Amino acid sequence: MTDLINPVLRGFNPDPSILRVGADYYIATSTFEWSPLVRLHHSRDLVHWRTLGHAVDSAGVLDLRGVPDSGGVWAPSLSHHDGLFWLVLSIVRTMDGDAKDLDNYLLTAPDITGPWSEPVRLNSRGFDASLFHDRDGRHWLVGVQWDPRPGHPRFAGISLQEYDAKAGRLVGDSRIVARDAGLIEGPNLYWHNGFYYLMLAQGGTGFNHGISMLRSRSLDGEFERDPQYSLLTSRDDPEWELQKAGHGELVQTPEGDWYLAHLASRTSRDDQGQFAVTGRETCLQRVAWTEDGWLRLADDQGRPVTGTRARTRVRSTVATSNAAAAAITPRRFHDDFAADQLDRTRWSTLRRQVHSDWLDLESRPGWVRLHGGQSRASVFEQSLIGTRIEEPAAQVATRIEARPRTTGHRAGLVAWYDRHSHYGLYLTVDDDGRRVLVLEQSTPAGTSQLGEPVPVDDWPDLHLGFALDGPTISFTAAPDPNRAVWNSPSLSSRLLSDDYQDLLRFTGAFAALRIDDHDGDGFSADIDHLTIDYPENSS
Image (cartoon, rainbow, N blue to C red; front, side, top):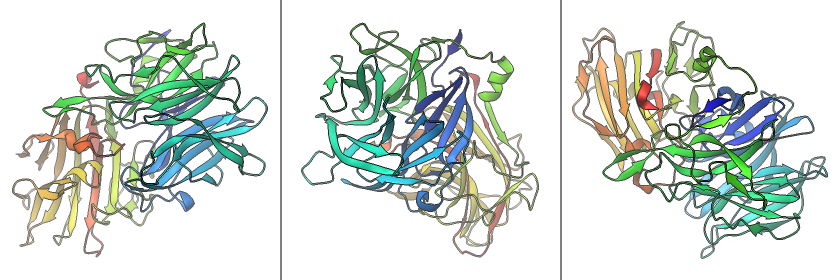
């Protein structure tokens, strides 16, 4: 037995789809507008997880250029059948009021690491689609039915339709198998003990989130609701450490135990209430079937098991040493860019693929050279690389070398949520051509400069950093790494959360490096490293 401490995937890792194949467990999580697409994780014991990589880069019909903030890849679903891994995902291309433009795709692979097949388009009916492989060899796609008509509920129910694997398309008519006066999504079908069970996310993915279940003896029949309204939720306890709990999937161990993978958020507080800078994270806990055939959490409390209030016991399928565990879940992230390729298990790019025309690891070994891209508002070709912030407290540091020649040249360190919510500390020049640092805040209302420019013309080196401490964030700059010459005022980190101004958004905070070249004349910057230190008590 070994301890499982939630969240098991820390930082922005939402909508977990969990799968066991033999002794191996896999989780796929949503990546939204970030490339590569669909983050894949592996474990042998449900406790210690490592990121394998991603299923596919943003190319072809899965190109993310032009998708809106919090659009892109929603709720991937992993399954395994007939020796193949099956992956269903949605690409959301428009989110405009009641309107959503999206496509659902299916990819398969003989191994979780690929190669993955060319995507097969399934439909555009709605999001959160998943495949169920029935005992008779038939395949069924369940998903949200979206209704954009004025005056109609947008969440029109959960649809079910057969998928013909040989023909590579959906066949027959779809039908609605579940409706709710509230909001239901994230459907997954299971067969257990004579029933088809339909697990649903309920209440939206915010603080009202939860999981409910229905069941039926036949896919052609009516589904009855669990007499307990929610299998899992934290909506009734705002003081609980893991909020927003919901959107789950089931997995069974070789020993016959059942576990629920679900999302939840660790929150900070300010005078406006709770918010989650690390976004929606992946948690696990044990569940059990009752005598009357319904699923319940093993502790029977209905709330997510937290990392500090309780621990869940898991049977380990392999022995994991303390050294191996530390390697899998480091308290420090450091990349000195010594490798000949960018580490795509940790680094993500914004809507675009990595290409040597804008990201160069060869010209100056031990540094990454980023060629300037489009503005912070672009949904096409920003020159930005980011890594997830995994704890509510973090110290971030980098060293940048650049020679901006115009006010359109900018290179800096960014605390990024999306195009309209971030802080950036940039090296540029003033109107007289002198090198200066400017600290900027971007919100949906626009971008503003915070304080006066900091002259750095006589600095031999440029070391930038920021400190995230729950509800606040502050930036530093120095000519050497051992002392901060300039410190920003304390700023609100709520801007970097899903919960800023009650906006509809779904990702999380990144530590990012970005380079602007508004003049388009070949400006670039070299970055020596990026380091993130997490205090021991931050988790």
